[in-house]
Length: 392
Ligand SMILES: Cc1cc2nc3c(=O)[nH]c(=O)nc-3n(C[C@H](O)[C@H](O)[C@H](O)COP(=O)(O)OP(=O)(O)OC[C@H]3O[C@@H](n4cnc5c(N)ncnc54)[C@H](O)[C@@H]3O)c2cc1C
Image (cartoon, rainbow, N blue to C red; front, side):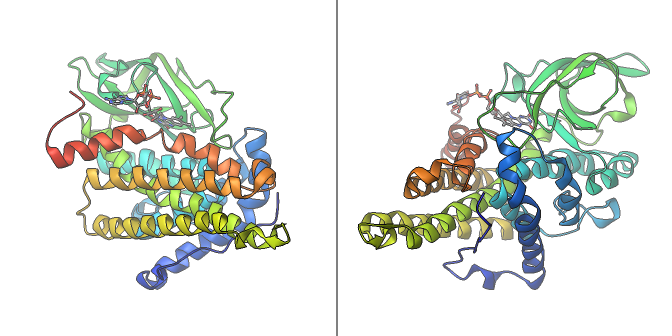
């Protein structure tokens, strides 16, 4: 792979809206990605393997629980810093960002928000340091966009719960020590349970043959009469709103992350357009190529502004789920379009692993599907503005 020469586009001087702390956090993540992710990521994506050696670095830049209080091992940062970390990691690779998002927003967040003090003390510091990795089991083979229909269930056996069912498409599953699993009790109410590797009847087979997010490990969670201790139930929230609350936090991170992937594609295409000579001129001098670049930076800038404002609303505790849906949907769509255009601008070189664009392009096919598909987020906006529910 070519050396990482990334220079971040900031067409509307958005850096002026960031605090010194934001910039320090962002720059530390950016440097780490250049040093420890860019040189190895193409090789790991090609061999479809998660690079375990970067876990310590992810913990050091605060990617595991950026906004979790420091007393639990988190970085105690605000929502904009959290977003900037996700942006920088996904600038390197969406699969690496997925690992960090799952750990922070889908495992640490529910334990912090819905767990009791013993659970927080037991799990959060180990997850923040990367000593333990976590995964989040919501999606099932027959229930993806409609998680409320889940069939995974648990029964109260007096001194423990008995968990049965299966989850599919679970990021980090093959190596996670801890799984936050959503399952229905005998009354059909959804609860979160913390399941640990090693519990009898619990297995995590890996999902192979992915053309997307190849540097992120994906698997199933299988529960065959798993005895879960009663103290592993998350006591402080139940119902579908509990997993959806985690998804709000993760989708917000994805909105920032997609900007990172798009920035990398734009920056690569811009540099290439000045270096590649055809018909005696740099291709960037041709109007058709300038149109592509001009539209890319316009869409990227709009997404940056949308996301920065969403971060301010999140910091004030005012962002709605529907606003987060809009940003996730818009930004991933923006990124996937920029990746496609950028890849064309590199001609044949664009399909090789010499450059990051094709990997971003393939990764974004997962990002546009997980945590609510492109169409599902559109329906969430539709419901929000009309008050009419297209899901029923
Ligand atoms: C790489 C990867 C990692 C993932 N990681 C996780 C994870 O860590 N944890 C987890 O729980 N899940 C995870 N997922 C699952 C992901 O969230 C689901 O794939 C996603 O929610 C879509 O579900 P589905 O694949 O079953 O598609 P379906 O729900 O079957 O949807 C198929 C199509 O139908 C459309 N559709 C569905 N319902 C409607 C409707 N009402 N109106 C209009 N169109 C509709 C969808 O938009 C989509 O285009 C991951 C997925 C991938 C690919």
